[in-house]
Length: 370
View 1 (cartoon, rainbow, N blue to C red):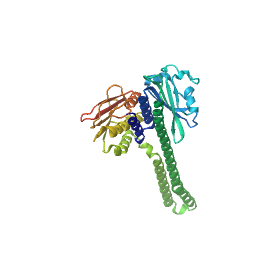
View 2: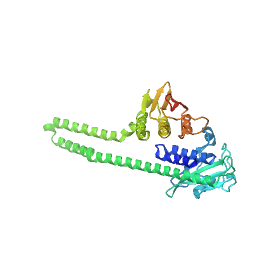
View 3: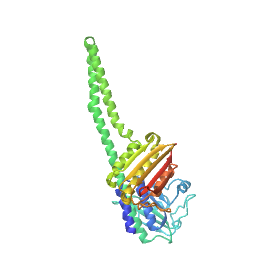
View 4: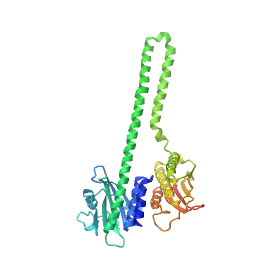
């Protein structure tokens, strides 16, 4: 059972999930398999001396807000940064390097920390605390945590490599535009200058005719400059939620094995903010990924609506999924429903799961629009 859950978590690396989503899934599964009440993953900064990111599991939004700023790598967390090797403690507060907890922090006793690595590089640390039903974490828990940490390291490494590839692509695109401006537009402007010089010497003879020609050349050059600028900014101008959802659904089509039905209603591109767009796209991605992997569905609909000051995202499939009960994090064998609910809450909204009319699951996110 544990091996199967570990393999399922590793398979997330093949999905189209964002890095924070993948890391949160890794922590959730590590907590579930080691009976840890709390879990966190700290990602090191470029200097590898402090934590640049800190993803937590087990704390509510209110608890995280009350605690204040995220840890940067002091105390026992700093020890793991300086000495990246597994560390198990029965009482974290008894360790000589423990710096205590900030105000409003829940009490924690047992501790397990392991380095997050990939191909010999240390990218951060995975932390688990408060083993439930036992006084401290075991050697088996350490092995499981190391497995999840290695998978998280691969995810971080892949994300950074992908970011570098994108940066190189942007630079190459800028170089191409610069070459076009230099080789075409600048040369044409130079030719216009020469024509104006000739016009100055021969103003009396054919001034009017040649002046019209020069003006036409200038207009043509301006048009070319505008075209070059448009090519530079066009990708940004096409990032409305409508185009982004369609592109995302198209990318997920091979994973699903069929074309989902997508529809829009209301002023979605003008009413939905960039912050909302990020959370909505992440919800679509995770929901469709779950459908592809766990529902055996042959059809799915995605509907995005803006009406009466509310944005509604509805995703319905005709698969065999079962709506979960209780507070478990899974949906029809999938992952991250708690994470999707947190996304809705951050936007002041809510997320519901109900049986679909034709079987499967109906996921509905409602978010108010300011």
